[in-house]
Length: 362
Image 1 (spheres, rainbow, N blue to C red):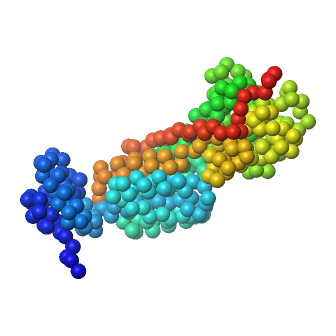
Image 2: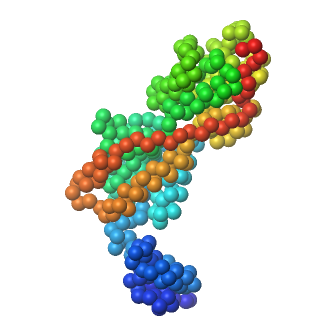
Image 3: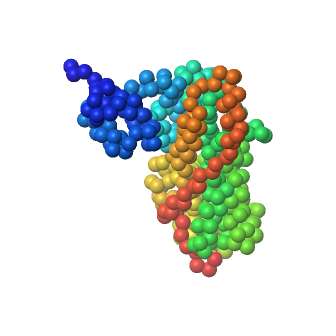
């Protein structure tokens, strides 16, 4: 079997020093090695099929090149796995790998999950949740650079940075879309108040009416829950036995499952979607929104984008301050405090078949 090429072999073939090979292949060539020499080193490494020893590099840099991810249910749930996919793609592009632990919605396991990852010498931590919510941050996350995705620190003096969807803007753009089709009598079926997403989406709905100079009819806002059956019964309250002249011409929903319930209610009542009533969802749920009949117009949650943005921010901190702390986490805690912020990622309007022009005469 042929011997594996070494950095010295690359140096000899490129006609440079071994230290120059190390600088270039570890990403520190600019400013230290001539551009022509950098090119020769890369060509020699490719010809010899050489890559740096990741373990040795980790030992020298005091980094494991591993990022730990804790999720509440993302791994075991059909929803939101794209957050981790987006995060992992960014990590791999920077030469890091991710290790994921899922607590299956058991908050008592949060701290032990973080501790398990810390025992593996991770360079940073990310906590990911299914659905936007405040998080009681495990205190041991302060020992390394950390970030939150799709959740936010519940402490009043929140210190951990977070990347979350812009739910207010999403609710506003949903209402603006049906307004652009001529609708003015627009109902909103929201989820419950147990999650921050629902009130933020309602806030955006109100903003759209305010910007259009129209009053909000409070009777058109119902918080009913998140499932198909609650969407069905909520829509029946708006539509059953109501004369065409006074029923809403469009119904916005806080998620796609509610929207399915609304469409079923319309069919029960002999109403066509979108000819009689336009229906709009939220989330762009995989294998649901696009395959629904009619295909749902919806606001797509930026799941993959949130994961990518959170990992990009986390790696910037990890790579700016490599190495573990030996001061009980005070350095990492101070760094987290100095960079604390909530970054929002916009949702995306996806126009399909369930929304259309306002009915004639309305």
